[in-house]
Length: 457
Ligand code: PXG
Image (cartoon, rainbow, N blue to C red; front, top):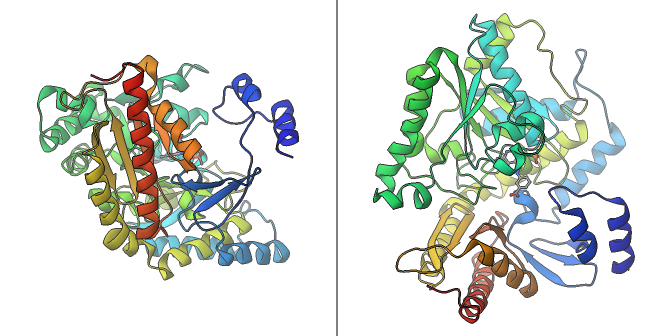
């Protein structure tokens, strides 16, 4: 029963990013099954998952082709490694397919087990690249505040989450952070338009390169749209200017596509939506729709040629690099995204439909700004719509709203006072209507609470 599971969970399981004692008092919600978009918990409640798991389940739940690919591979060859000059057919075939669906500069892939391991690979590969070119002093990687790049030592260091840096003596040396391109927080207060601010924010990168000395800067890493940071959609002017700056100083550009990859933004990869030509691309999540763990790094020819032709052995890799079952599921998943034309579905149908629904939600008295990019969306809750003034952080408006969502059977995340969604790419207009109606209802309930608590401006 649910109670037994919750007791055993509290006794034995240390879940990620969790206050263990608080959870033990409350008891975990036990999720037992899923189909398409909805989930069910162990008490039989139906939940509408607007976060598709944790940004992963691009093709939705219950896709037979993925389960079949896994069981077939499990019986044929459940594991072999790719160390010591061996390979397995699923890894080879997925590498080939990824070269097809990624932008033209990508012909090679390095497989990992997760996005974090992918970003660890990025750090080692970028430094190896500059070593091989005779510039070992070129080892600094520039990232951004409020970025999320994973939870390993390198991933958390690249990330710009101060709460994570505070635990474990991070960041590791050679990683620095500039401010994020968050117009509401850093542009609007100065009266800049979004486009003006995009250029200002990109030039923070140039200033940092010049401060460090271009001969010290190995790479710049960023998510096309910051996901875990609250779905921060940068102004359209930002990324093209970042590309210009990277080109000017020879700095490698790394696009962390763990969330934005595989159709989320309405193109196969977020860099295509944003107009950049990255040298490296981290991916995970959507490559298997989360059905099994898999991640990796797409390595552009600029870097690949150096590693291959001048490299000797690259002393890096994981037991599960190119895991045959994970790659078989990846292959089935990427083929399904292609065959169902899900990228086109997002770009031409449900993406614009969601954008319109969010434009309408922007009129809600609690909403300061409403943004979408493809099938990700954010609503910023504000105390005073006229001035844009924020809520008293002690009241935790985001958590109040999230609580209502939870009770109404909708999973919508709160990042501070930004309420975020990333539904599966297979979602239909009717399902978006159902989701948006629930969102509106939860906003109304939160507004009523704010009024009752004397929290309105
Ligand atoms: N890069 C990005 C952009 C991510 O979003 C990672 C790397 C790390 O991937 P792995 O597979 O190692 O978890 C991520 C992961 C959240 C949340 O709260 C987001 C992620 C993971 C856990 C929680 O939104 N993204």
